[in-house]
Image (cartoon, rainbow, N blue to C red; front, side):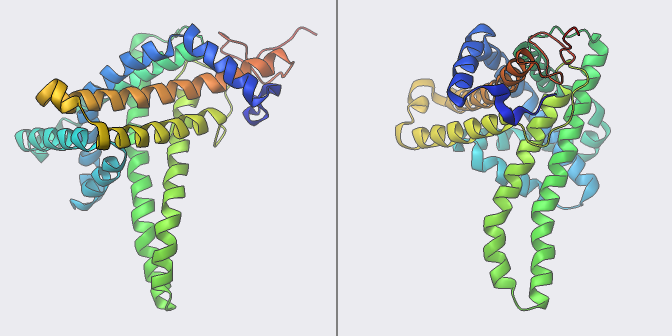
Length: 303
């Protein structure tokens, strides 16, 4: 993979035009609508998987509470309450022991959304997935499990890091100062972890070969920026102009959740298009580490 931060020799304006055309060409918004449906089906199993794993690593409800607290900050309030109520109902109906024993089934159900992401990213990179269906589903399950563990580690880093820092700072009499600094610094840390998570998707989900790892790519940066901006804008709109409850009644929370998942899906796929367009431009300009549209391996010009 080429160094994507060179933008393949494109100016930001030219890159934006190319990505805009690619969104229409690859029907990215249509794929985002499909992806939001699979996300809706996979959301509760994924949260159940996360809370089950938390039970293995820490016998406390604090991690679940913290996970839902971070989730609450980006999801519209009515949609968040719908998810929490559903999660409580499923958890109380199944019981902790059954959820632990059924972790493989929960992982399989949660991976449905990841399988949809794989299809969407293959479309963004314009490649046909040649992996057999069982391997494709195993990749989806593996990525889902990796994301679950990644989320656990990220939360432990953000939360336990605060406790360790306060302990060390308290020994030197700077606990109050540390708390003030940490309340600011932990959000850039969380943002960096989200960037890495999206880059993991771009690296392992599509059927590409000989892809070098890059910690932060322009596509991931664009995806996170779009997602945060759109989520905040959606929350502001619902706060002042929420007509969904009037129009859809009790279904309003479901519609809001679907719309937020649609925004999330579109952001991920548009970020992939950004990386794809940059790499295509780099390949056309002669970069031997870049690939043309539809290629799985870096483009090699004839000598």
